[in-house]
Image (tube, helix red, strand yellow):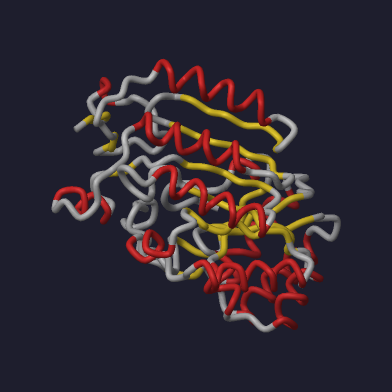
Length: 305
């Protein structure tokens, strides 16, 4: 299948067969996100999806893990998603898990019976954009849920037998609020116990709606050092059994490990990079085409303000 747009999936899915069932994101309103704004959302036909499944099978493929793309695939109508899951089972009966991105809202719209049915058809991991532990930040970022709703959705997801993985974003609360957000996030994650936490530290494209909030002064971004300090505090406070992976594209730093077992090693790495990071009031954003988030175009796509 010819893929349209930028490939977006959790690092835990890097070895999965990615099966697009739609183009773009059905929600597509998060203010920090620019991944799908250039795409017109549409669902792929059953014929297109089956053709891709047949292509992989004919090539000798027998994937044990399948990731359904693109953004928020779990928001598909129940009947349509069920039919896609059944189709996958017909082609790959030995597939062990089918995973996808979801939103809190897309979970709450399902009945308990529907959630259990999805689990029986192989849906295992749902990746949720939790982002922040603070309700006012969630509202500003237009996440379409608050903490109460997130607790409810995750509880029902667990009850149905599925696994939840959390995407968070240090720096999302803005300048001066990193410690506050770390405490709130730690409380939420310790109680909801995701299998994985992936931290995509704040990194903006200038066409993301949040960039306009920066220009008009309604959002003041945290510095790179403050993002690191927030991450360190968060890791220090996490007590649940969690696989943690944190990315910092601008300073090319990554910390990962199993908590709480690797906490001391992870915080030591963060202490070192924090000490080496100057206390400057800068933040980073990218302009132009740089899908791999690397220094491209002679380095001119990186900007500090």
